[in-house]
Length: 545
Image: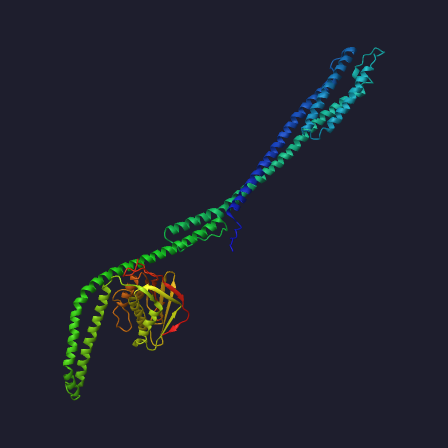
């Protein structure tokens, strides 16, 4: 079943979108307040312009209805009055049209209802004035009275003038009302702009702070972490808790840094190991040349010493018998015979020991390719255990062999047997009575793992570092030559494998782990045959030696 990772709640893009939304909202609020005020101002200007046009017409109506300043003849005055009424009607029709446009444009504060009512009243009075003028008769007493002041005309004339005055005042009120309403709207828009400006300032400061927390600080931490890694510091991961892509980037970078650190440590370990192997190889070459030259030179004198000591022992046998039969207190008594016998045995033992060392050196110097064949490794270990069980240092100690598989691999059985025997002997020498040596055999990938885990005296880090050096020995018995592990390492290396030694510390035992490839790393064995496939079968159970 595929596991889908849970998305983080606070993604960086969500944070950026939130900040962008807040900035856009503040900008829109500022723009809305400004546009609202500008619209109110332009509406007031247009309303005032249209109302001023209407006011000019109404003012001309008032002036027209006012009549002439000088007195004129009755007939002329009546004719002029009729002309004024016609002009008033024409201007009133123009006013009605303009007012309708104003109302249609939405520029009349009260919707034009008051003006429409006053215009209707004025039209009625003008109609009545026309009728009154038609009914006009000359005065019988000969007194000339202006037509506007005659009894049947004056009431309608006064009402018409009153309507025009009311209409003019209504227009003035509309202008003032529009200005007041516009001022209120402009004041509200100013407050909106002020609030939006304050909100924008607070929002800007807040976003700067959070962008510093969300982006700038994590980026600086990432930069500092990258600088540390560039300087070779892989031990200090970047700690981010932003919960977004930057934290994911930091986590991935930490994982990459951990892998780089592990790779770097592994490379350093390999370099150190290769350096030690190079030094060891140089020493092997030197020791090989030395062994090849010195062994031949030493073997002949050693053979002479050993032969002469044995011959001397035989020749002195009669003398030793006489000395043993002499009185105990004499100068040539049994005590002197025992000293001579011990010295002769010491000469023979040390000569044999030197010969054994030279034999090992000669074996080591012969580094040619040896025949490898399919070998049952479990049987090989059990055969070595049969030999080791009879060793003196095996008394009172327990050896457990726990094979888990039936394994057949391409090895040189004699060389690998000497390695196994050397591992067992070293483990037995390091343990006291009651100690335990556990041997395990299993496959690991394309190789065989043979582990020797003992409960002996253990090793210090200094001993572990030099354990495979030639002539290096820390044997408790004092009889080691320092060549066993050195030669074992050389044999395993020739097989294309590795041998490692580990120990928790002095008194805590040791573990030697040998890895040998299942297949021969070469193109064939020494006789030119092909490499058969290795056999690995289950093999349950354990065998105690």
